[in-house]
Length: 246
Image 1: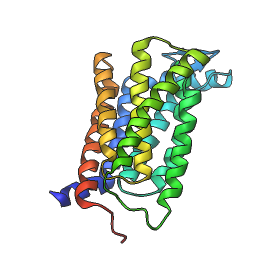
Image 2: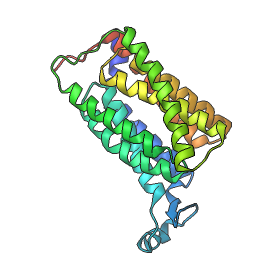
Image 3: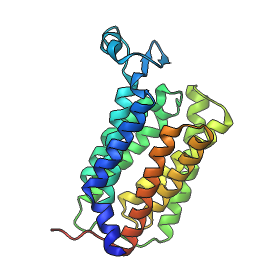
């Protein structure tokens, strides 16, 4: 069982499957036809007219989002493999994700994503250390998770009412929980806690439930994959611990 877990986590085929899955579900829902023009999101721009529309000043939001999502899943897979290149890609995808999230009405992204950016930069530098090894959970682990959740709610609500955008409580609560889990998950990942992937299991479960309620089938498929990946990586880190250098 332990060998199977490590093979799945380290599998390049699963990387390709994840990337193709994201691409497939996005294209099947015509998300590549989404643009951002004059402060508004517009859907259904024919692909044959997309280049012309971009030249006229529109931003190809759908295509950029798809590329960002593909690199995000690759970053996640590489971090699971304990490869620092995953953290480096995560730094870049944080920039694109924050910009896109802002365009979709989450104006608190101005406050939340810079924090994620600095956490990812911290992870890159931390993983470069020779003594960076998977560690057991301790009191600091729980403090990070609790602090991340509190900080998530504070920043999301502060950003929403200070910077504008969507202010519905149901929306802000979901965004706060998701962001709070991601803060704790990213910090624990930087410190290589063996339980770090438990945060991502919860994160993806919340996202899966949210998209099921919204009947967003494309995202449902995506988060099922993310949930599967987080679960197998959680058990791999706990049972097999550090990847031995070749």
